Image (cartoon, rainbow, N blue to C red; front, side):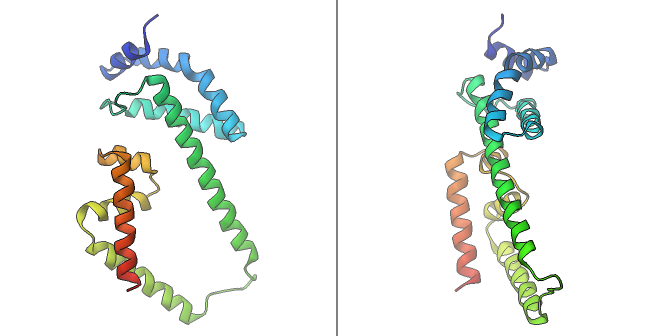
Length: 176
């Protein structure tokens, strides 16, 4: 039986049979972990699929010094946490929507103020240094911190530091 690392190296070399072997090896344990984390079968299947897609996308060998097994479980855990966060955001949005009066349109003054706020935010983002503006766009696209670190090829701590710096600068500009 080939080791995980040997299969991973073969996958990096383009051997899709190595991917199949890794999938067969880790499908059940990952699914069990994800299912316990999320509870719903459909969500667990989606996250399992996304976990293996992450393995296929990791062609640059970006997983570093982790063991492949630990890396797969870390990716699965992060995807589960992202699902939980998205679910909470969706629940809050639905709650807020349910609490609005049926025919509640924002007053013209409020709509104007919101439009001005959006315009001010766009202008403030445009004035950010390139690395912070890019970070804003990626985060606004829904990427997790880990995904940001991967996309930008920087450590996770650097992503967190830059996000803090970005938020501080935007806050200073919008609320002097």
